[in-house]
Amino acid sequence: MSAQQSPGPAGRGPVVVVHLVRHGLVHNPDGILYGRLPGYHLSEIGRAMAERVAKHLADADVVYLASSPLERAAETAAPIAEVTGRPVIDDPRLIEPSNLFEGTAFAVGDGVLKRPANWPKVRDPFTPSWGEAYLSIARRMLGATYAAVHAATEITDSGSVGHEAVLVSHQLPIWTVRRYLEGRRLWHNPAKRQCSLASVTSLTFVGGVLTGVVYAEPAADLVPRRASGSTGA
Image 1 (tube, rainbow, N blue to C red):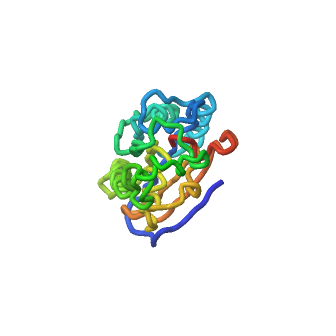
Image 2 (image 1 turned 180 degrees about the vertical axis):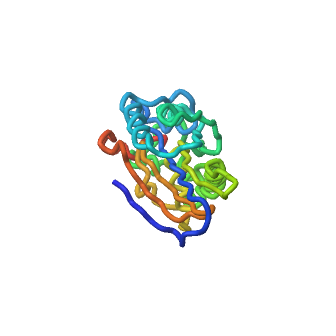
Image 3 (image 1 turned 90 degrees about the horizontal axis):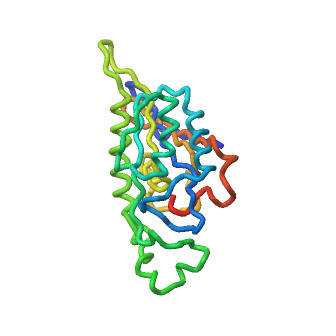
């Protein structure tokens, strides 16, 4: 599945594409919202997803590759590094947001929102009250994205030449920065995020201005039912 949008008119300058990659499926039999907790690695299917993403990006003109420091992101980035020949740069700006429910078996459908003890945590869905503010996520992801744009812009004697970059991150950071760049409000319905496991959201910049978004799911057939969101993201 893919989708393409043009947030604004094309600018002048080098064309740079930044691919935002969400990690693959994590081994999480207990359904824990793992957030930033260590020790959560890709499952066997998740590793196959990572290989599929690497194949999808094999012919891209990638000159810069960065990843969230969490294991599941680093393990997704590894096969991309192999096919592109680029080292993986550890960028904490790409990390999963903090979450007050981290370490618990959290799912909206299991009645967690009906428990009075949880009400103070979910009182404000617009900031949100249960974790890192959407605006904070957008700002750090913008920093990582534009660092990638800069790294993928080559200055030559005859002008600037654009290349491609890959950033491996998590569902909420990717979806938040996309909404910010497209001029949409940051609070949203999590069930309607277009950011499945091992998906690739490709942002095209012309002269530093976002001109298009393409979404792809190279591992769509490997995503288990109801796992596109995946606890922990």
